[in-house]
Length: 531
Image (cartoon, rainbow, N blue to C red; front, side):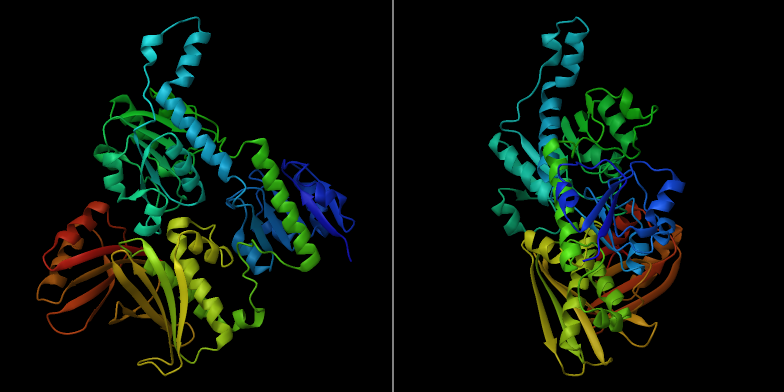
């Protein structure tokens, strides 16, 4: 067997990588923080490249590594890796998604205890020669309500530990059904209701456009006075200036933050001068055990890749038959778009997800399309770390039953139609589409209402009563708000019945504008969708 040359350019636990060092067919090389010239020379014959967050693997560097077939990230995210460039080259990108779970959960608990008992401030006071017992009166966790935002791996581990402290648990996660949340001992709530009830809130959701400033000035105004906020997930989840103001005026009693919108935290950050805040430098995964697990997971994956040609945790390569995937082409993009569209129109936790195939779909095509649609469904809430390979496991973890339905009969209006359908706590929802011709993917139906929409761009999706004046009121409101309508499509079952309206817009309407739309006469529901 030809030796696999593995390059490590960031600090990764050497004990965890020991299986690579001892493997007779693997040549392990360390080039920590190499100069560009040294790196270019080294990459000439490297087959696998392992990094943490310091090294930036760009398309340019990938182009300088002709033998590269595997990139490994010692951690959860892959923000420092050009995933599309790697995919175009057929390079598998892997990470270690579960290795940091316990470390992150424990750090969230550590910050929760620190802010409830003023640990950091009391320590600094004593070291300064003072003895200020009355100044640092704290609160107990016992009997308090903890709001867990995001019930994935880390959120669940925090919930388990909080239960041991005698806390009451409420949670928000659009992709966890009410039944499964209650099985975890968590009462499911909307984010607004959670903030209004919780004494402590801990964040465990991914970053991205959908969750940026999830906690901002408006949400903090609606939160329970005296809230204590913990963030070990992503800095961008919090509007830091708004939080600093809330800490100063006492609406938020305290905050424990491990992540920030810019890292290292800038010297002029308003958080540095805010009272009752504990700041740590992104330590969530910084335990010896977590770093060892991360390195061990990577080492095992590299060995399996070399010996069996498998990358089971690949974020970008599903392992399906390459010819089938290539033949599906635009259908894969459509499947993911249908899933993403559906996810952004949900109003309840998902219990089941079904992908329906109508028309001439080959049996070998169904699984890739089904998984791709599932990936699309999960990505808006779980983030870009969801892959074709991880999507089924992520769905199972959240209690989502996934199924496929096939009907070889020719559907109306197209030779083949693909439908993504979900059963939610609020009822069933579905979206159907087809590739009518090369370069012509279309959404053909929303909840059984016929429509013709390009699955791209920014869209306002309204469910409304088919009655005179509704379209005019919607257009007038958006016009006053300065939102230009690029395209409008409508669908209905019958006159004066239920209808759907999809507006492609050039600008992003504010939350206030969307709320106004929902209050218009004849409008039942409003969703914002980005594809």
